[in-house]
Length: 215
Image (tube, rainbow, N blue to C red):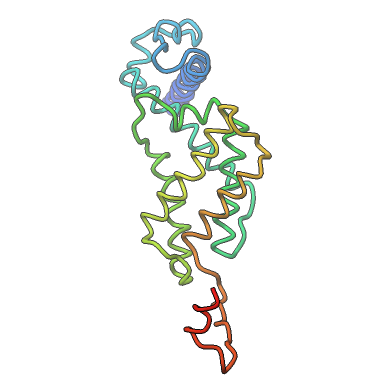
């Protein structure tokens, strides 16, 4: 029993140390960026030694990846806080708006997640992209997706990332009408209506040739 309690205490202490290191790294990344991140400064802020950081995370790149992964986990939780629409296309519209809202509310996290100079995919980042891919699958299963799933997924991410980056950089207002125009144009381009369009009825005397001649 005493041995179990000792192991539990050690595990809790190790987790507390990891969280302190991650908090210090995130704070520094927000102020100096990845290139200016110093292991020595992280140690000062977290109250640890360099070997402790290397023991828990391996190297600086792995530490940054872990911080980014935590940002993606927070990003995913933002989507889980609200129930998306049942309609698969409206769910995509909802997702676009939620993505933008997270980005402008957490610009530091967003820059770490998507605007790193030496970025590489992390497990949580890949999981977030896969959620978008699953939403596209839902639209395809409803018979409403026009391009292939991978192309539609990439197009959607390119669209929302571009808008979010411009808003964060201050080039576009959060309430700019252009945002809804871009969002809806992208969705209209990759999806079809749930209701098929009815063909326009022509008068018996109206032929294609007559219509062409009138134009």
